[in-house]
Length: 468
Image (cartoon, rainbow, N blue to C red):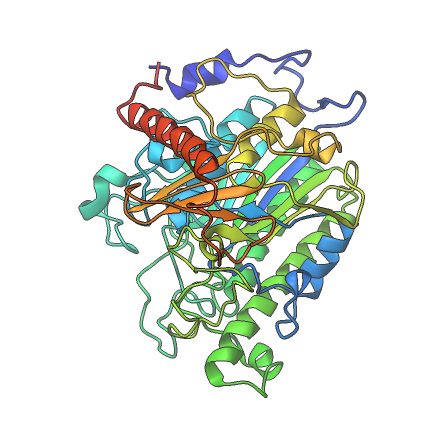
């Protein structure tokens, strides 16, 4: 079993020595290492942003990002709930391989190599901002869902997973005045923690997305000042329950119900901070070689969109959060990288949060000795370069009793652990209305075989067989 310290010594450096971190070059000769920003909303539905057709919620900055970059028509979260998806972003591996099978279940194991740890071998400075949900952040006092003595075995904060700077919560907070219970001065019970293990006590009032971005911006400015490439993981809490918007944002939607005002308003407030981020990158003159990714961790909350103040939309897709139907895992997806991506591009190639890891390592030409394998994601660099017309491997899913496998055209789905399956042609039927299992038995059989091999492989991983 390789330790993280030994891992950091064992990567293959290519043509770049670690002793020269300030002059680094990417796969494209003569180009400085790109900065990496991974932005993620929490419970934002596929149909919520304007760039996917929403005509009510104002998302002008995300819409501008879509026009300036690459929009993914079929972008998938690795799971229909938050924690597993977040793990996939940082490891490239399906969370069933290391025990994060649902929200508030498991934690990031020390044996896993995170994207932050990998990038530090290239001299990157790393920061995590917002929701963590991959382990507890304190061993000593009650915090959030599991923090404190009750959850010591799940202690795995971002600063022990490769992040230098942190402004992180274990789990959800209200989207306005995040440290207070909605419409109350009572403490919410979840805190923002820093990389030294202390709590943040200042600048915690108002819109939560703005509070998060207030920490992201100085981190980016400092990295730019010191000419250091950076990784910023920005995981908004919006629009997860408790959904609260400030008066100025609710006023934008005064013609709608109170709950709709809060939901629409908090999404617009988050969009405003994405605009602030994009503007800051341009003012620092680093936007051209910065990869900015945006997605959601799963589909919208609520069986019918009427749960609490949630009013999220899956568009015409079937299912919502917690479902492996498309509405639970097909999410908004964007990439803006002016140096390499021409604006106005749209791709129908299926892509996934698990793809972040290998894509970034491919761009940076990082090869790791001791990296836990297999990795479920693929590198999207060929897609970015216009060379990938189809996904080379299907995307497999498991959540509770649900199983699914999605390839470039077809999808199989089971809600009873594989006893029976449905088959859908996503090219012709993205709403999953017509079950083709009886009409196309050979396709169903082949996909079932692939999925069962993957499940067996995941069980071996969970037994620790990937850690050498």
